Every structure is written in C-alpha cells, then in structure tokens.
Length: 185
Ligand code: HEC
Image 1 (spheres, protein in one colour):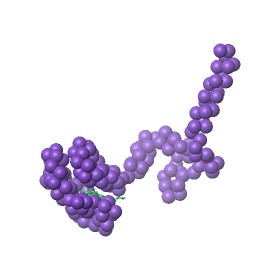
Image 2 (cartoon, helix red, strand yellow):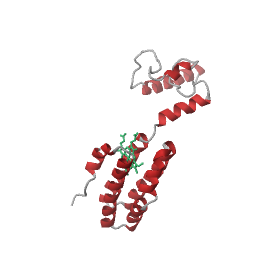
Image 3 (cartoon, rainbow, N blue to C red):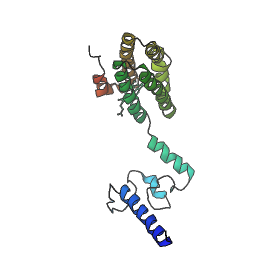
C-alpha cells in the first residue's frame, strides 16, 4: 500500500469514528458557566468540557468533585434502586442477587455517612448496627422465602423510620415504598 493510500485509510477511519460520535450534533452555542456558581468565574481558562482539568488548582478540582458527588440524595437514589432490586430478587427466589444488592446498600449508606456525618448516628443506630441490616442478610442466606419476605417488610419500615428521624418523613410517600408495600400472593 502506498503511503498516500495508507494516509487516506487513516483519514477515512478517523472520519467514521467522528461520525460515530456525532449522534448528538453540536448546537454551536457559546460555552459559559452557570450564573448560580459564582466561584467558577475565577477560572483562568475559558469554560470547556474539561471541567476538572481546566480548573485553576487541585483545591478547586476537589471542591468541584465534592459539589458534583452530592450529599445524601445521590446515594439514596442508588439505595432505592438496589432496595427495589432486592424486592425483585426475593420474588424470584434469587438469593445471590439479593445478597449482592444488600451488601451494596450497606456500602452506600456508609458513603452517605462519610459525606453527611450528621446522618451517621441514625444510619448506624436505625439500620446498620441494630438487627435490621444483619437480619436481612441472614434471611437471604437462609434461602427461606418466607423469612426473606418478612424481613424485607421490616427493612421497608426501617428505611421510613430513618426518614422520619432525619425530618424527611414526607419522602415516605415516594413511589418506591408504595411499589414494595406487600408481596403479591
Ligand atoms: C440516615 C437514615 C436513612 C436511612 C437508613 C435511609 N434513608 Fe433514604 N433518605 C434519608 C435522607 C436524609 C434523605 C434526604 C436526602 C437529602 O436531603 O438530600 C433520603 C432520601 C431518600 C429518597 C429520595 C431520594 C431523592 O432525592 O430522589 C429515597 C427514594 C430514599 N431515601 C429511599 C430510602 C430507602 C429505600 C431506604 C432503605 C433501604 C432508605 N432510604 C434508608 C435518610 C435515610
């Protein structure tokens, strides 16, 4: 193959990769920082998609990561998803899937406590360090379908009790709790 041909092949490959990435065509609108985040105006480089690399220093990079990682709300999304998958696992008698999600619920509650230390007391006292977490874990490992169902409903109550203790009891009307209020007979 001549070097011309090879060059053309490389160009063609690059063009098809670019095409493959352009499902969302650019709007051409000039990038700018959100007005609500005044601190960002201190950045020397212009706003770009390199929202971490283009920051002025590491302190600012860590600050941005902290903002993006959120507090309790983002872990709760994941926890609610895994809680509902646990509900599905129990109905399917798939205890391994149940244990898988249940162990990650514990990990995520701990990250929530790391991010919002004023919530650690209730996370541990109402969920991780009293019988709630362990009893569910043991019920799953026992492979006893009845025990799993009873324990799941106790978990549901514990989730909601913590919301009341954290003064977000209004969240107990979340659809995830309605969907998991009982097991179909
Ligand atoms: C510390 C005790 C605590 C425990 C235990 C707890 N939560 Fe929460 N949850 C909270 C708090 C606090 C919030 C509100 C977060 C905020 O203010 O950003 C919340 C928010 C939520 C939300 C709303 C998330 C959103 O913003 O969309 C859902 C859904 C939820 N929790 C489900 C659950 C489920 C399911 C469980 C049990 C497996 C559970 N929670 C266990 C404290 C807890």
